[in-house]
Length: 300
Image (tube, rainbow, N blue to C red; front, side, top):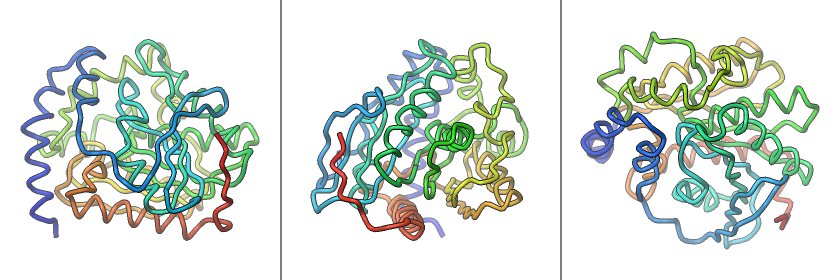
C-alpha cells in the first residue's frame, strides 16, 4: 500500500512538472524544468570535483569512512542535469555505504549519441581499473548503465559486480504497453515530452541500436540486476521487459513495482518512505553481491 506522502508527492509533481514538460520543445526548456532545485543535499557526506578517465564529475564520499565503490550515472533525458543536481540521490546512497563517482557526461543535443556512451565508458574503464565496483543510475542514467555493461563486455573491461536501475529508459522503439496505458496516469511524463526528447539524443542514430535501446541487446553475462520502477510510469514496461529479457538470458534479476510514486521518486528520500525503501533495498542488493569489503580507495 502506498503512503499518504506518495499520493501527495505524485500530486505535487503532476501539478507543477507534468504540464511544463508536456509543453517543452527545446533543450533549454527541458533544462529549466529538470534542473530546478528540488531537495537539499544530504548531510554526512562530502562532495568534491574530480576527473576519472578524462571525464569530469563529482566524488561523493561518506564521512563515516570509505564505502564500496559505485559509478552513479545521472538521468535527465540525456539532455539535462549533472552530478550536482543529483546529490539528493548520490548523497543518500553514500550515506548507505558507498564511495561514488558521478561522471558529468556530455549532453545532447549539443553532443548527441554516442557522446554520453563514450564518456561513461571512458569513466568506467578508469574507475574499474582501480578495483571492483558497482553501477547505478536512474532514467537516462539507467539506460547508460545498461549500455555500459554491454560496452564493458565488448571491450573486455571489468564488469560491475551488480547494478541498481531506477526507472531506466530501455526502449526507443515501442509505442505500446505502459506508454499507452499509463499516458494519463504518469504524474511526470506526458508521452509528448518523451517524443520531443528522443530526436535530440538520437540525432541520426538507429533507435533499435542496442547502445540506444538496450532492450534489443543481449544481456548474457551481465551481473545481477535490480529494477525499481513506478507502476504508473509510462516507462514501467521498459523495466518490466528488460527484466524479463535479462532473466531469459540467465541473469539474476529482481524487479519491484512501486505503486503511486512518480518518476525518479528516489530524490525525495528526505520526505518519502517509498524513496527510502527503494534506496535501502538497492543498497542492500548491491552490498549483498559485493565481492569484498570496502577497499578504502581514495582515488580522485
